[in-house]
Length: 213
Image 1 (spheres, helix red, strand yellow):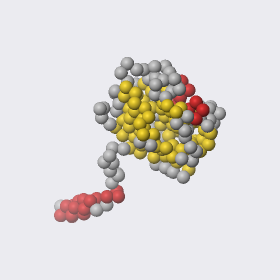
Image 2 (spheres, helix red, strand yellow):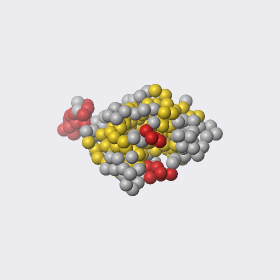
Image 3 (spheres, one colour):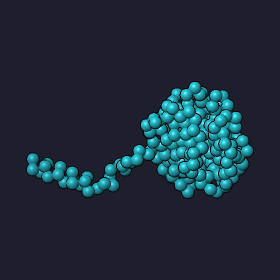
């Protein structure tokens, strides 16, 4: 018994002294969705005519296609409501959507578009059947090539909010509003990143659960 007791004690001390063997802690609640080395749980979205997708320099690089190109989440279930999603995107070349995000809103889906309709329109598609160029969430913004932009979405039971580089961009109250996904992005469900006739790079993709305000 003494030998077993000593062995267990040594094992316990060894575990205490080797924190590197433990799963990394995540006190702020963020869950990384991209390790910078491989697509992992992301798969290339088969839109037809899509550009080449590769992982390079710690980024998911999406080549320019004839229309939509991108990746779709194919891993464990993620929150559908009461969550924040954050990522960085950079336009490499092209003149249209550098960052399109398909995301769940409870049982429905919607998309956040940055740089659409010729490279400037930012907003949600669709709201009450109208795309970002038509509904009240649409704004204009110039996006420079070779510059990283940080996008953050917050989706709760009450509203959808979006920030670009910490500046508020979308603040949509969901009461009496209907959100839906543009048919062109159906293949991006439940969560997808896309470009339109544009090559872009994505990195630092993460998600966390939040409480409704």
